[in-house]
Length: 47
Image 1: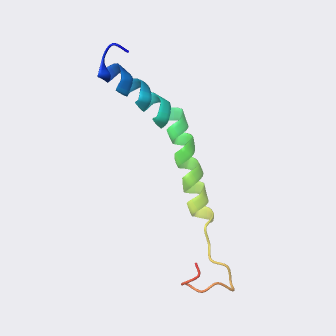
Image 2: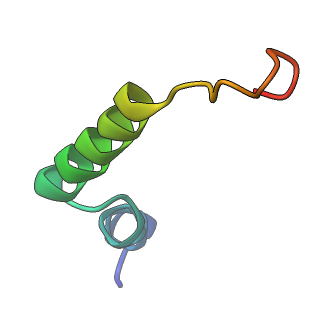
């Protein structure tokens, strides 16, 4: 790298992923949230 900005941009791309990756991660988390439910034998404190 010739500048710190180039190094930063490379790190940012490596660790954040592109837009498709972000979208897939978001969809997976949203689905996990939507399927989240308390079991009949659980209390609110346990949940």
